[in-house]
Image (cartoon, rainbow over all chains, first blue to last red; front, side, top):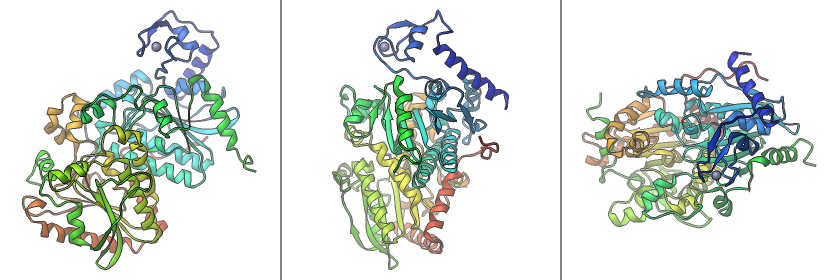
Length: 284
Length: 274
Ligand SMILES: [Zn+2]
């Protein structure tokens, strides 16, 4: 076990301890949706859903897993994958190192093996702290390997997406990750694998147009922006204002693209139920 | 090697007189029977597709259609498909697989349409399903990028066993204008974007993204359509002959592995598995 591994694992434990109320913080955080300022402890008790307006603020991948997995079941997968700079894009390597320093992540995705209510599954999560969770070669590779691992071990696959789309700095190589991840999911599913795709705020572009839209079950957090084109691009194209709630989870549910909207506090219960329904022997 | 800069190539790739999908179909195929509609709710003319013969052999042919004059441009939405177009393409590809027909696609689009209705009907889902479907098809698939290969809207018709590209066509993650506006918040820096994006056929061939570059006549494909058609015809004939030696599962495997390998500088899959 290398050092990064234990450091990240420690962080997961810290999160779990925080939820048990053993750690307090005097700091306050302002909600980007309603502007209300609340104590971090209050945010934390509410799983970083705004205590005033219910906005599901973006959270990092480890924090999310700490809310969902059975304690002690987390095992990180494929953490050695590091990003490439295939276009030799000016300033990109420096940006990547700065983000690694800041987040402890090599790129914007985390894959793990874990249990929910005793049911084993493979998890792959995008982390929006890392260039908006955009999908470059490393992110695409991690999603693909998570699907391949799940296929080999005959386990369900659960993804949580949060992404600005393609990683511009990796150009066409980023675009090809759409084909690569979609193909991996297709292969996993045609082998009988269960794929649950969970959208969080915001998920747009190449991630929406590839693996994330291929779930056997499609779920989303309340109020998440989910789309192919971003709302600004659409408004510029059609030269009119978009209706209230356009491209939000509730809108997608109404248009037939989601099975259910799941508040953050219910992920564990809903995923536990779905995984149990697909356990072997549950078919008869 | 090439006498044109990337930004000049973008202009050539977008030239209004450049042969489009309808022109390639007219010139290279016989007995074209157009198939219309997605069988859910609509028909999207920005994707043209159907059954035809290629040197006597029935094939399914699908491509983006921009239209040749303003009226057609508007009807075809300047080659920017809606979900209906991608779902029609899926329908045609499933049928091709059912009847054992090779699939030939012509790619020429600024990108999938970023519109309100397109989003409401699931643009992202429609593209994702194209990618997933194409990756597993058990018939030969050849794509030719003839003009602009813009973003996911282009890739949705280009998950092929062989991706060929005309010499001055371009293929990129986003239009140079969009790229500049996202990265530098300044769409007027599009020329600079062309330089860093590596969107030319020559760069993409080196990067392993396309498998063949097809020579254009002096000045670009629009200066001599017949010469362009002869080149594309010869390339399709050659590639098809090679692919038809493979059985269905081998075709699907070759295509999967080719796209699977697209990501550089990455270590091999983990040794110690939990
Ligand atoms: Zn709020």
